[in-house]
Length: 378
Image 1: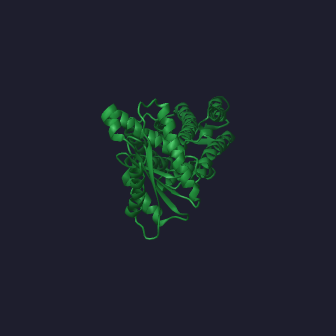
Image 2 (image 1 turned 45 degrees about the vertical axis):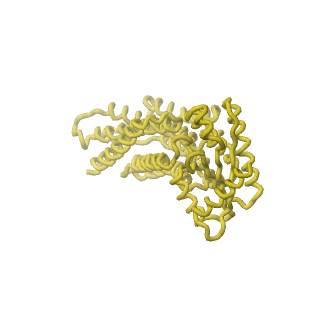
Image 3 (image 1 turned 90 degrees about the vertical axis):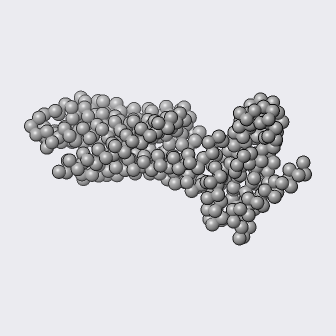
């Protein structure tokens, strides 16, 4: 009964991963993060399937039928797919964090070299049986190489986990902070599986924990899609209002709201077409990301509607706001020149500071009033 329960749990996890993979594939996400997420799903689907069929190869299920060679092959596939899954997870985490250090070619080469050691060890196990062996009774017996493999996998994922945790210090968006926490918890799945291996591992903790984590990431991914503006790939208005309300209730330093307006968008649309107008809006979003990316407490960027964007930031340094406005204008001009824009345009920025008793409507209205004065003065 215990073996059947073990197999049933694996079957449930296989179903979850297969469904997530199907839905992800239908989404046709060709981004770097999307590709690596699919790779993670494929690797762990193979991992779960190999262990599921290995469980069914036990004598308690098949009786006197001996298929020890098949069982050995299935366990070898299990170990190699686990290593491949860890590699894919690290690449996916690096893509999600957008960390230059983790995405560098040398870092990826080093990661591959480090994980080649346990992968080669799994292949050499066919001859030396140092990683695991299958007993005459069909039981899975771990060797000293198993502990070496798990230590390497835990150490590698812990490095990437540390980078995810480091992002929490500067992340003001609670949705992204939750996503980073989830990414950083992956080594705990491996650690729990390794710890339970010393007492027999009667519960398939690694497949359950990884399945739950992948399902949560997938739900979080679609939540972000719902709250992201499709054209500019920044937060949309619905998510913006929720964030401002959150910031009004939870802030330590003064909160500033910048209302950014793209000048002459109607002229661009009428003269050069709406596609060129869309390109101009995309450059505004790029300029905002470029200008805000280096700030310690990362500002929140959203498209408010039409040609208007909003940046919300928390700082005790008022001079930072003036510098940020200048950086945004300069970045937009540079991006427009690089794109070879055939027209002159600019950004107007209204600034408002959150005052006691303000709600999100009053804060936005205050910034809009400042924006109106700037545009009228022109």
